[in-house]
Length: 104
Image (cartoon, rainbow, N blue to C red):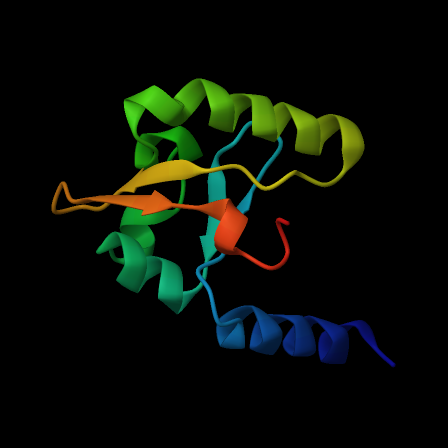
């Protein structure tokens, strides 16, 4: 299978994923996001891309999120953590990972 087909399949899965997805570089900068992320946060794609991921996380949860990012860097995968996300309109959304089947 050639690389173009694999890339297209990945992009299709990325967009069809039932939750929001943001892809980060190793510094925590957002390099891509799916449509659900745009809807969840209330931003256009060009307003999300290039921003540091912690800008979307409540101040009381940023240390926890930063530690999670460090875990991903070291281990290649993160552990489920509870966070508070901040939407463009200022609304805070609690994310309870204990309810996510992948985080239990």
